[in-house]
Length: 264
Image 1: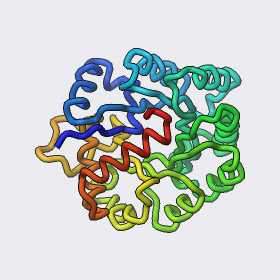
Image 2: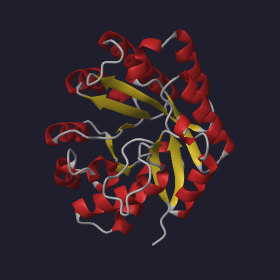
Image 3: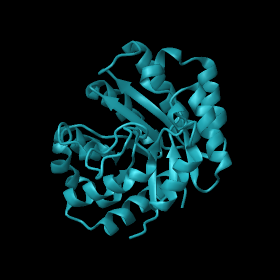
Image 4: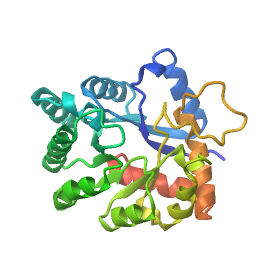
């Protein structure tokens, strides 16, 4: 079955794709992944993601933001760059932004400040927000919730949380992005149990390539690098967990991505 899937989050600016990026895109197209949102997460990757989107109109789109890991590097220039890129037609969301207290690569104060600044940009530009949260749920909600009336749309990218946090995000109106984490028998089994509560009109799928290679792929790939063509494995796992057909999940996630990012 050939699909027209949208991978809402792939880090194609990552240097692991430097040698074969065009081949990666060809394999994605052959697998039925027709459009990819390239994640921006730092000053450099924001510019590279935007260039990739400009070079592949109608196929690649990009986000512009600073990941909480890089929050210490968030400067006035970073802010100005995101605003500049947000004015470009290829940039369809602000982010990846949010909080990550699991690694704490940047101090929490810096993470909070960068997160607030990027939510302000999203509110001012009308662009949706591409969100990251790990082990920081309470602070994340405290910062995000008051801003929601000013934001057009927001997605909890790469959701890996528990039942309670999922229900809270849904009550807040967030879209939910599901990755190959759901294919991980060591740490993702709980997702199979709770992903059915996500309404049809709030679900999206993503690879987060080159990370989170689905562990259920057979035969096993020769490399651990994930890439957009493996979105079909995420689709299969999500459909199975929701007791829906692959075709149904393909249709709703594509429609949701088109509506969310304005790429219909």
